[in-house]
Structures are given as structure tokens and as C-alpha cells.
Image (tube, rainbow, N blue to C red):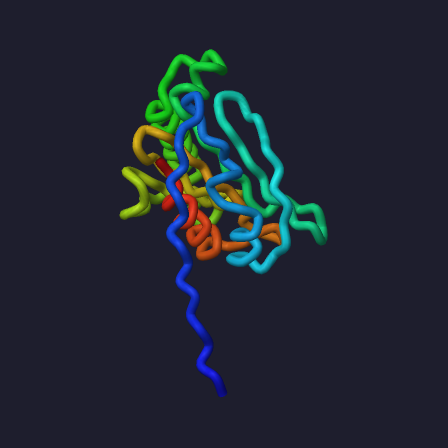
Length: 169
């Protein structure tokens, strides 16, 4: 039996800010989402207030399996938001921690830090599985359903975050 040839995966190129913003759909390609999750998807650009967004939709059942958003100082400024991307990350995290302290049920709602991911990162588990990353003063969010057929699970979500991390400026 011939030995399978191992093809090295090239390190993705770092993205550049264009007019101070990043196209969230360029962080992870639909093909990469499909390879990692095993689900054939299409990607669709979103325009949430103050951010660039992208969602990946399963072609078999139209379920959104992954949403990525990116806040930069410039994208927030264009939306007339009075704070920076770092402050946005801190505001969201503070809100998540307050909610965790109110709910007091780690099975229903959990917030915990993640080491060695960007400059700062944390995991939020509620009805959604979310990984929030701050890197070079840019705030990235990755979200997937926590339950049901649209859920890709923590390990798959983390693999996709790590692909995106290689492209983050």
C-alpha cells in the first residue's frame, strides 16, 4: 500500500485592515468551515451595528452553524459608538460576568477565561457557545448554537477560531 502523501497546510496570510476594518468572512473560508465541521456551508456577510459580520449556513437545512463578528475602533466610530474595540470587548465581558453571577448555574450559563488565545479571550456558554478574543486592539466574536443540529461543539469552534487567529492582523 502506498504511503499517503502529507500535504503541509500553508499558514494563512495575515489580513490587513481596509479603511480600518476587517471583512469577517475572510477570517475563515466556507471550505475551511466545511473541512473542520463536516458540514457543507455557504457564507453570508452581515452588517451588525459597529462591526463586520459573517454567518455560515448549512446548505442541507439552512441552519446557521457559525457567526463571526469583528469590532475595530474604526467600525465602531462609523456607527457613532463612543468607545474603542477594547472597551467594547470589556463591556461585553463585564455584562456576561454580571449575568453569570445572577444566574448562578454553571450548567445553564458559564463564563471562563481561555489562555494563549490572542491577547485576552474567554468562553461563554449559554444558549450559544461563544468565544470572544481580543488581539491587537481588535475584538473578535465566534458563536455557534450550543444545542441541536446547528451546534458544532466546542472543539470544532476552537479549531475554527485558531484558523482565524492566524489571519488576524
